Image (cartoon, rainbow, N blue to C red; front, side, top):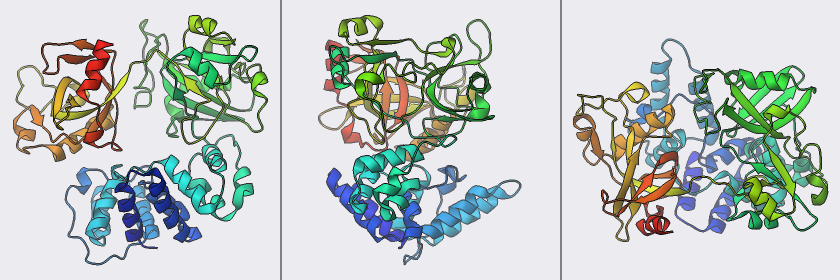
Amino acid sequence: MLLADLVETSGVVAATRSRKAKVAAIAERLGQADVTELPVVTAYLGGTVLQRRTGVGWRGLSTLPDPAAETSLTPLEVHDILDRLAALSGPGSQESRANGVRDLFGRATADEQRWLRGALTGNVRQGALDALVQEAIAAASGRKLTVVRRAAMLAGGTVPIVVAAMTGGEDALADVGLEVGRPVLPMLASTAPDITTAMAKAGGAPGTPVAVDTKLDGIRIQVHRHGDEIVIATRSLDEITARLPEVVDVVRALPTDDVVLDGEALRTGRRRPAAALPGDRVAHRDEGGRRGHAVLLRRPPPRWPRPPRRDRCRAPRCTRRAGPEEHRVPRLVTDDPVAAEAFRPGRPCPRPRGGRREEPRDRVRRRPPRLRLGQGQAGAHPRPGRARRRVGSGRREGRLSNIHLGARNPDGTFTMLGKTFKGMTDEMLAWQTERFTELAVDPATIHDSYVVPLRPEQVVEIAFDGVQRSTRYEGGVALRFARVVRYRDDKSADEADTIETVQALAAG
C-alpha cells in the first residue's frame, strides 16, 4: 500500500459529512492493508502518527522542498523515517532533523506533503476521530462494535487491537483485559439537563439507587501500582509520575500491591481547576504557602463481568474504600432525586463504555457553559511602554497570546464578544503563534503591530461564567471570564456558534 492511497481516503473522508460514508471509506482501506501495515495504516487513517513526539513542528515545516512528481512513499517507510527523527538528540540533532524532513517531503507529492504536514502538526481536518475509526474496524472485520470499543479502551488505544480485530476474531478481542501498568482509555460521560433525568438515564428508580459523586475539576489521572512500581497517566495516557510525587506517596501507602485507581489531582487546599499540574513545575503552593497536591481517588476501572445494577453501588470498589478518607470525594447513594439535588449535582454511578460518550454515565454539574467561537484578531500582551512591540511578559514574551472572540453572523461575518488569554498552556501559546502567523491578513502586522487581524478560520472552544449585556460590543453582549478550553480543528468556521445563540444565553 502507498501513502497516496491513505491520502486519497483522507480526502474522501474530509469531503463528506456522512458518518456512514466516512466509516465505509476507512473500512475499505483497512481491508486492503497487509497485517504488518495495519497499526500504521490505522493511525494514519485517523489522521495521526504513532510517534508521540517527533521534534518536528510548524516552524520546521514552514519551508518545504518542491514536491515529487510521482508517488513512491509507503506508510511503513514514513513511519520508519519519523522514528529516526524522533530518536535524534544531542549536538547536531536539529540540523539532522531538518535534513531528514527535507528528504522525506522531497519524496512526497503535493497532496502527500499537505497530508504529512497536517499529521505532524495535529491538523488533519477530515472529521475522522478515534471512535469513527473503531466503527470502521468493526465494519471491516465483521466484529461487534461494542467488543471493539471495549478492547480498545482496555488496551489503551485503537491501534493496539486492530490486528486482533482483523485477524483473530471476537475471541481475541475478548481476551484483552485490564492489565496493571498499562493505562486504559478513560470512560466518557454524556451530559444531562438535571439530576432527575441523569438518574433515570443511569438506571435509577425507586428501590434502585445510584451513586452521585461530587464533581471537582482537576486533572483526570489513573494510577497503576504493581508491587513497588507506580505509574501515573493522564487522560491522554501521557505518563506524569515524576511530576506528582505526592500522589505516588499516597498510593504507596495503600495496603495493596496491585491496584488501578481512577481519580483527579488537585492543588492542595484549592478546589478549582489545576491545569498547570501537567507542566514543568512539580509542586505548587496553596493559599497557606504549603507545597504539594492532593489526589482524589474514585474507583478502579471496570471489570467484566459486572454485578447487577442494583448491587453495583453497594460494592466496595464503588464506594471507593481503596483510598484514605482524606483523599476521597464525597458521594451519596440514593434513589431520591430530591436528596441527590440537595447533595449537589454530580455524576451518577457509571456503566462503562469505551470510545464514545454513552447515556448510562451522565454528568450533571454546575460548570461553565461552552461555546465554539471564531477568531478575528490576536495580539501580544504588551509590557508598559512597549505597546507597539510584539512582546509580552513572562511566559507570553514574544508570543501572540490574547485572542479576540467572535460569534458567527448570518452573513458569515463575526461579531466580537471579548478577548482572552486565560487557560492557555505554553504549548498552546507556541502553537497559536505559529498558526496565527499563517492566518494573518497582512503578514507585516506580525512585526509592526500588537494587534494582528486574522482570517476567521480557526474555531476555539471557550468556557465562560456567563453572558452579560454590553454596550462596548456590536452584538450587545460579552462573555464573562472567558477562558480557552481547546482549539477545534474538527470544526470549520461555518460551524461556530451564532450571535443569536449567545444573545439567547444572555436573555435566559
